[in-house]
Length: 204
Image (cartoon, rainbow, N blue to C red):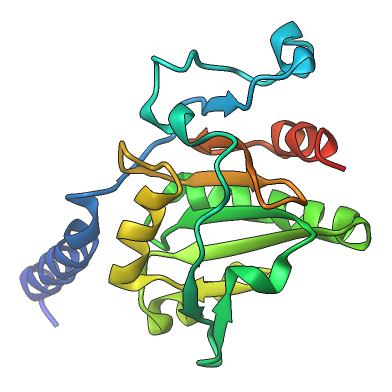
């Protein structure tokens, strides 16, 4: 096969991939910047001693969702079973909206795997909601395993993410829910294991 033909095929494949990713990227943008982290106001949060970057309530539309009860959802997992938010009532739940095409999403998944393993016995449950179809997620997980439930949001994940406060359309987007079902903190952007762990420890 000539070099020109190889180049043409490569360009076609690139365009196909871009079109697929752009269907969601029109509404959601991956961000690799430091996460904006909003906490529900508490005396501890006011000290700023936990290493979390905070935003004032006027600095991000997401902040207005703090202390609200987490929205319900009903989404399929990779086996096609319908899962609901209520399954994890009474646990500290970390809801992570992500996509296979989102580089900072891929970067934080191994950290979430470690934290699930470390704190699962203490009632912590990570849940990944993929803004992708099942086939894309299955292909992805053959390369990067995910050790917690992954639900297929696809197009339904877009309005759900907004219900959880993602008014700016950022990926990854992570919501920490306390045992009473209240939204305790929200992170827009990729999280390190240390920052995510600090947020968890406040809820245990």
